[in-house]
Length: 304
Image 1: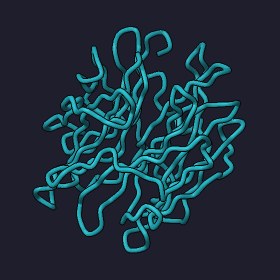
Image 2 (image 1 turned 90 degrees about the vertical axis):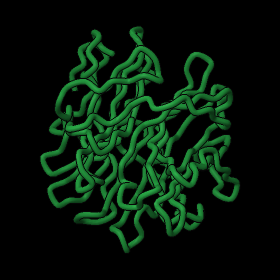
Image 3 (image 1 turned 180 degrees about the horizontal axis):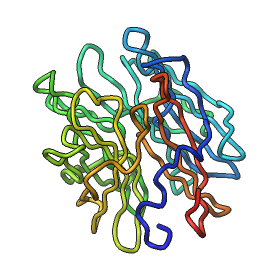
Image 4 (image 1 turned 30 degrees about the horizontal axis):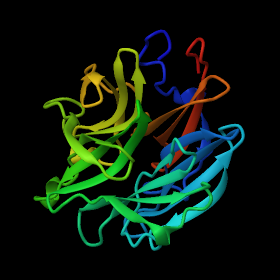
């Protein structure tokens, strides 16, 4: 954090630029759910592309590269057909301490509300092969698992994932964020719920952590929240803090960032090697489409 301010990285859309436009106009066309990594003089960005229900849903994940963090060149497209899934959601792009790359993919199981997470591994972010995927977070008959946030810190792999109840189909949009740890980033041990819903609040229906930063005081997280099933797909951004990765508490009684047209969600925060920070997020436009936006935050002042 800059000067201990947990709100310094919150989006200011008026100062943002579009990094990836949606694949069409109007509701249901989305580009977003970003995951960013800075390496070798570039910013690498993985994101989900989506069409409306009945027209493909989450039909692809792209991995792209940028020299300035703002204008991206696609390197690789992975389709839902290649992953044998009904829909793809937020990817997670990670560079391991050894220098290899991983791409964690959220995959919907055909004909159900179930989600699982699979991983691809490669020596280069343009070389992921869907034919070599493996399931790392299978979920179970009662729980769908998706949208992991993964951080290697203190010699441990940390993961926060969105978990959905499956026993009642009409309730499957509800979500909490559970926390897991791993020695290798592949075999995970669940440690319980890190962030839960707040009854009666703007985030009473679901909470999904989107990015996490370790601080001298503990852990700072940004999360997506919604109060009703009707707000599904249009979540807004909140802030949570805690003394350790397994225990996070939401701050404030209202969203901290939103679009005047609906959602502002899937915030990701990227510290740049040359100084400063970039934030990436999914933003609802006036026509109902979602675009992927970015902002540069000054490392000294926190100004956008």
